[in-house]
Length: 434
Image (tube, rainbow, N blue to C red; front, side, top):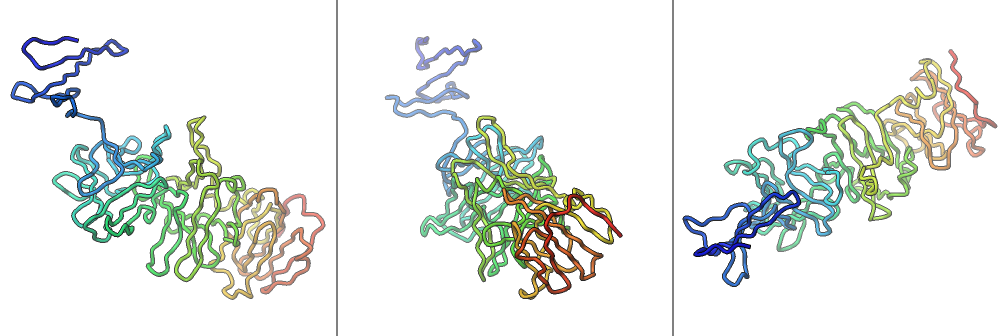
């Protein structure tokens, strides 16, 4: 420690582990010849207060007087999630996003300005509440890049919940004015709903990023189809690539994900106002998410802290004809094949009358409809695996034969020419004939 005569500057000499010198000055006055630099501080006479440069701020609320700039972040109460500015992949564009706070791999789960990146100098960026209560992202010269467009409020505040939901509330009534869960991007979190509100017309679905470097709206969507029995649909643009379901009152019957049932439970709401589904974790200490990737895959992942990785507990790909290829079905005129535990096809265009719907209860519910044979996938339903042999004639004909291990449906006649018969043993191999 060196005290310089005739000066009020106390210089502390500190050696780092690499033996590099860092000089930190504490001064009691700023003048024309005395000023602060990076590590300096201005100290009050009794050393009660100190002024100086500090590390990026972590705040728990955004209000009219508290806002984010360049390296600042908004943190949830339990420090589970964090909101701030980021650059995806190798991109120089800047976005506002939400990511997990306490895991080593930065994983973004929501993006505010996904189609409106910031391209100017970071020092001019800010995220703040404006005079009418909107959360706005501003760039140079006070230019608004993105806005929440929430209802007007003279005393609005924004907070990040431990669920990952960014919420704007009225400071007087505490009424929720806007929330990020109503505007999902590519990731579904516990408590987030997917589906449709019939009163407002609002729909909630996942949309993929264009690439790992570009979070703008991509080609793929994952949505809850609310016509017919509710079921999930994966689309590439307007083209349906995969259907998952339908909902049978307890779960989605087409699930090929038996292992993930130990992690969460579904919450389905079906009424005149809305048809929505969300999931809740069985163990809240588990960090999990489901993400629609830029390549069109839906990944349900759990964070493994000991491995420092996201482990995929289930992966749903966009292979529409996987079940048929697996069964080696090639004949376009007549198909007879054995598949394990079939998932049902689309019910949107099946028989409109409930009495005409063909319902065959196996390990899960299977629907058979005239002329509708696409989007059927081989699934494994936990320990309840049963074999079904399906024989389908040319599309447009009425003759469909289903053979199953079930005395209940033995020789049962169905409308539109569909019937079942009991088989003592499922055929051992696939047959093809003309």
